[in-house]
Image 1 (cartoon, helix red, strand yellow):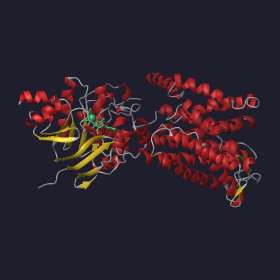
Image 2 (spheres, rainbow over the protein chains, first blue to last red):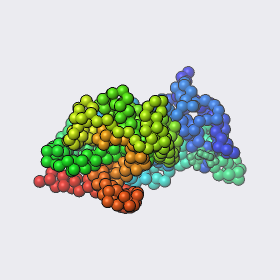
Image 3 (cartoon, rainbow over the protein chains, first blue to last red):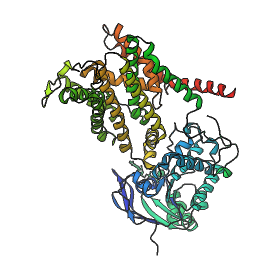
Image 4 (cartoon, protein in one colour):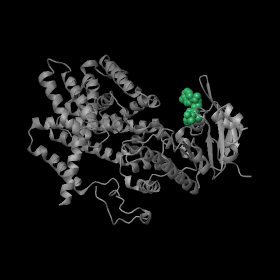
Length: 245
Length: 354
Ligand SMILES: Nc1ncnc2c1ncn2[C@@H]1O[C@H](COP(=O)(O)OP(=O)(O)OP(=O)(O)O)[C@@H](O)[C@H]1O
Ligand SMILES: [Mg+2]
């Protein structure tokens, strides 16, 4: 039996009186796309931030390739092979697209010419080759989201954490993003994706986990999970779940 | 920037057609090189034609250009404001003088040693503050600089080393002596400051293309995103600050040799710190030539307001600076270099089209 790529064991996080995440455990296998669902305020971004090193868990372990990374800082997590996007995209506004895509390359190499070459390849991969020398502040919101994804890829991750990548996108843009994420997985990158849009989750993931009020309430295949009463209750309220039952 | 349509690229086959590729990565256009060479030649020839007064004024302007360029190396690229950089100049200036008077060490060594001491001080200032987010760096730099100035002004000697309080230190005359870095004419000082400025500009040019430069710009753009891309903001800001402080310390040493005198008010005081910051910001921080442009425009202005009006209205030049700064922030947030660049680019394009 192979060890999982990521093994989250009982992590928790409190903000003052708010117990944002409690005793959360799940596993992520090499090569899979796992979706993390849950209503607003469920603790998804907080869990995400703990894996990415932005929050220090109050307790528990996060094993990545067998090593506990729960207390590493974000830049060390990046070097270990985990990249992330932000729920609200955070581009380097006064740099060009290619320059944005170059920054992460220095984590793996010091050859500037090779890093630039690779950044241009990623721009092409995103379908943004024509905007390579455009300053990011002149891009559309969706292009910034794609750039955020490309920037994460520029660090050559093993595991990619994506927080709501189609938020605010049109259906056509959503489809484009789904296709991109598939191609990223086909390159051998394992993906943990937080997503609200059910269509996207169904199209992408083989397995979903659902959080509510900081707890894990379901884990399984997308079709099974979304018909479970506790999940329906979390999303639509008690009465809807009762009516369906 | 011209495209290279026939540049062989291994992934070219997969590229959409007509994609504008960047010219030689971060290269300088031939026209730009020619302009730089001409400016350089003119600068080197100046002492042959200029009288002593003009040469003195040029040295002062180039000194400010050098100091502003050193300030810009960290502050301009990382988007942090230092209002205490003069403390690094003070360390460099006092160290150069004291090493010469106390140990007989040649200023040629005193300058880099002073620079290293300034870099060491910058680590003490930067280490705790770069961990924090917010305006702590600006506050800490001004607090440290003022503390050091006040301490020097009120200290006659420490551990047997004469600091000489507010009166300052004079450099003992050694006549015309290359070893003591003292000259009767102005030309040698002029060439020295031209060389220092060229070095600082070259360092900034290299920074823009280096890992450190990309990292600083990323931290300036968004600290969280930078961290997620493998960057420890505290570490790289500290490295840049140390290099900037080293250059500033050498500038302080030059000041001591040129004026043969250092005192706390002039060399450590907040005026010099503000000069460095404003020249950078108004000229265009985060660019190679912005601080130089700012110094060329503002240094003479500072001299005029200080010289003709400053006697009766203390600090008037700061009022003038403040007005210019407000105008610049309102109308030219990227500094005066931005419109100048646009004009030059248009000229170059027109020249290239012919
Ligand atoms: N930095 C913080 N300080 C204090 N409370 C926080 C912080 N971050 C999150 N919280 C709280 O923790 C809870 C979980 O928030 P989190 O952002 O993880 O939810 P989420 O599942 O990502 O929600 P959404 O779908 O709206 O993005 C919320 O009650 C939130 O208010
Ligand atoms: Mg969230």
